[in-house]
Image 1 (cartoon, one colour):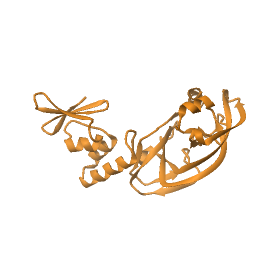
Image 2 (spheres, helix red, strand yellow):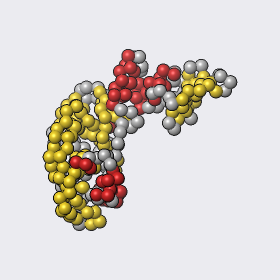
Image 3 (cartoon, one colour):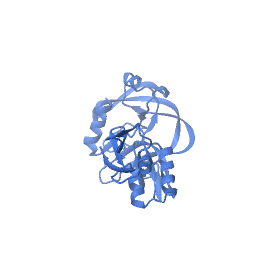
Image 4 (cartoon, helix red, strand yellow):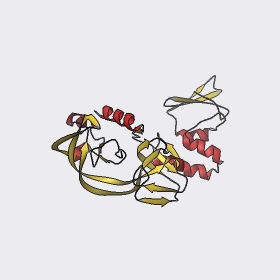
Length: 244
């Protein structure tokens, strides 16, 4: 059901919406924090160069990619009602993974980025179900919930760098170390993006990708191979010779 609904959203709105699931976003430019991905409503200006954990990402026609980030450590207890498309069986399969709860039933002109992520064990079905002409094959289930939600905002992609494979803590530490090493701006951006090129030193590779899963000597001890998930980096004389 979730896949069917996602496909309908993309076809009808000519927009792509992707679950980030993990990763982090490093803000490098002065930018506004927005309460929604449409960049409307309340906003707050930030000048702080800092990485935040990402919980969602959305891209729409003629608009920048927007990342939803977790800001601050405080949680607010929220009691509310809304609608979901998952069945009870689908919720059981999700386990503790959050589900999107929409305040209103969506139509063609709705804001598809306006939702609250709630754990399935914090939902209770009211028994009411509804359908809409815009999505005739989707059944909306009314739910009540009580959840503790972190403070989140949306930021545009042009304001920084996204790393889908690293946490905010890791990205902040890497950025601080890169600054201490006084790397030039071009090299620093490549490192923050996770790009490894010929000529990198071992220190620069470790800064870019973290510790390798395995290190081994090859080619009669003239070269060293670092293995990462889906990638191998070959060194010769302390410099990257090739990336596989």
